[in-house]
Length: 296
Image (tube, rainbow, N blue to C red):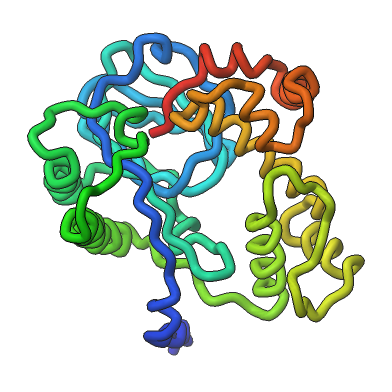
């Protein structure tokens, strides 16, 4: 008889209670005209899903290109990707972060796939109506703007709407065979602990440091990162700063001046920031802002 694969041990309730959720947006709108027919820069994206209500989207991620046709959903893994939109493309999109305390995403493996998900689309429309009451169209920039809730009841209703949506999202992923990230071994836990620490560092600080009480020395920590991620601590911090720069330039956070963005990232002069950004991306910050595609 063939051996049956042992089931993974159940995750205790206290572990589930430690999950951190951050609801980033729900929007429904046409893609901006300047994004039609051109590939975007490589941009950092969180976990989420978008539905192509009109048009077509192409995605480059995980070293492959995917086409997302009309009436299909794209389940996005957190990470870097490029995207292309056909003229007239209209999207319904949700973005969020759901992470374990060490910074590991709740969902990552098995994502970046395009399928039909009619039930989740209906629930996403309900979420859009609950969050943007009475509005038929809300852009990405509007959805990610600083819209403060007026009362505790407003905030609780907002949280409840996203939580209800998340249950259907998780059920859809389970149907597709996508499971939460498995609990990791000691070596991987050390890497997760180290990356969570590096991700918590201020963006203007690039000097590698170790978390308080970390049981390994700096040399062994560097080896672990190289083994699991292919880069060291300083390169990790530099890549994180570059991703933050891209996001702030092209998103709603980029409404500030380039000088302000440069200062928050540790550059004393905007010219130094421009030279650094051009060296890594081949574009100036101004060109990136003018031609940057919207996140979906």
